[in-house]
Amino acid sequence: MPSFVITEKCDGCQGQDKTACMYICPHDLMVLDKGKKKAVNQEPVQCWECYNCVKICPQQAIEVRGFAEFTPLGASVIPLRSSDTIMWTVKFRNGNIKRFKFPIRTVPEGEVDIYAGAGSANADPTKIKEPGLFTQQAAGTTFSIPA
Image 1: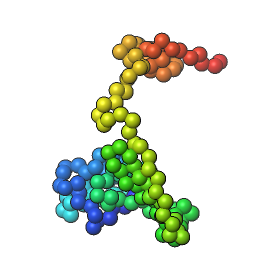
Image 2: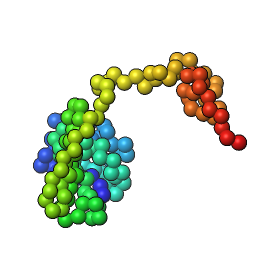
Image 3: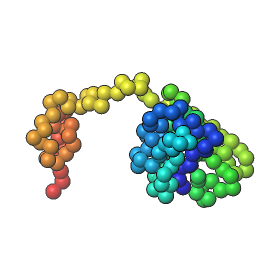
Image 4: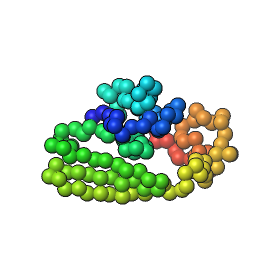
């Protein structure tokens, strides 16, 4: 089911040009209504239900409507993100509430070296069309392709 913005909670990321949910949505569905200064899902039917907008929203103003089979009779799943963890609150239809806390980062934000250990500095761009992964040749590792 699609994500929706709770307008009472949304502050449009305090009038910035681009809201956090607009930045994170992989399908570019979230937009800022400049008149109301609120975010809105412009095409709910196209929502991928990835929960990215829900997790990143600093005001907790976005929720995802659950399927009747998954969240019947008022059950809900709500994430609360901090800088290093995410707390999932699951409210069951009988009223029980369970919370699960997980780390979301293994390195400080902005310090990920995507090429670390891959030896991509030695990668040969002329081999881009050869079968295999980009970093296999650079790391000195190759895998044979079954005939």
